[in-house]
Image 1 (cartoon, rainbow, N blue to C red):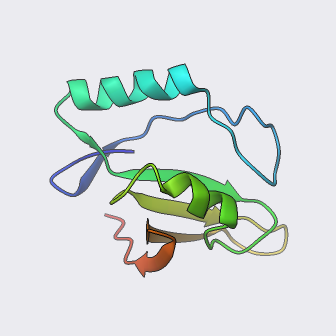
Image 2: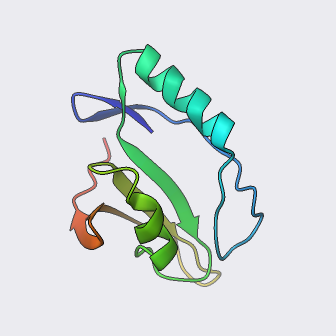
Length: 106
């Protein structure tokens, strides 16, 4: 998600190349192009979003490992279950430390 002054301004979807409900893999060149688009518009990468299809919306070890390259970026996780409504949570992950942050939807 792109942002300006702490406000979300856009969503840029990326394909999960792993095609797996258990892990994700993003195409490096496509990710680079998305970042160029965001920064070229004078914005910043404000959040990375994805879903957990079989678990609670809490960062997995994969999320924690991947977050090392994105300090200060929020991780918005949508928990999906066949028996419940989606649950959305947001986290900051710094040096492996996970802290939930308020997600304000306007």
